[in-house]
Length: 421
Image 1 (cartoon, rainbow, N blue to C red):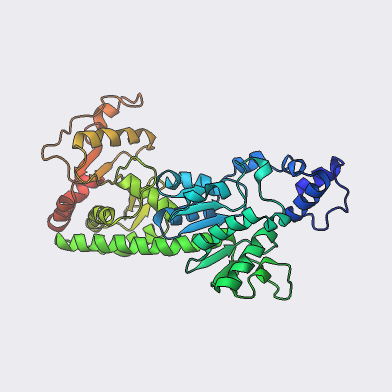
Image 2: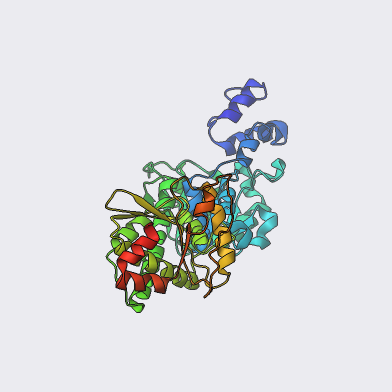
């Protein structure tokens, strides 16, 4: 462990002072016993790196699961802020998910909570719960019991990445398992040794089912299950809407395949884009599912009318229809639910064109714009490109779902010309 090496190199510890130099709790006890504080250790821990920790896909998917309400709480014994940064990315921290930073913050417990069981790197380092011996402290026992009663009594409790000893948490969990008989799962890529009494697995008294996966893989697969359900509900709404309008399409399998390629946390971002919301992440709701169902009913009808050979969603959430010719037709789709005027929407969308590489200039708004939309050029000159004088008026096509389905049914050729021109 880097901190142990630094303590030895700085002459504060001798090589044999610590038996298991990888065990941070044991190292903290040794330092405390020798110096009467843990400052010598915390000064040599990568606090800056912890503060700037970049979330991986597991963190992002866990944040999305929290935001969507599929996971009640995430409890971490890490000190880094990677999970918190992921919550910010999905707008979860500021809207519905509370953050509990330590015993002094118990009142912040809610239905969706991120808990730093041993405090985070943002706390005063003298308050970090590092030492194994501190488990005997009454205040810490009361704190961990409060967390346990609030979180670990959930129907399903999963411990991830605790294949190696975690003395402070292990004793608490052992006490819980004995007292409550809760069902637990242990996620770790390494098969636990049931004969090794020093592992975290042993603290679960043999009651935990082992799942041989990494943290990222587990969080991703859990999120994928929810994503699959979300996509299913969205496509059901889309199919129902298309049927109501008297349309039909054979594009559903291609549309489903395209959506199932999108991770859960990115799907929330695309929902926000499709609904022209100002927040970066949009949760699934019944109302929004209906709005998006209307939107993708139009997409399916258009894909059928133009004989699209494939459907893809790019990073922005734009729909790209593959054609027999080999060309790709990009479409910016949106449903504003009648909350904005067409002029406002067209002006906002036109600004996006600056980031689109040529010849991706066609924007299609599947919505219900004003009855008398103003289709005059939005900007005479954009990006210093004079050719915008020519493209400005027709690069955004206002098309409602009912109109798209009607054209797809009655005059597919006309619809294809309008979309693909």
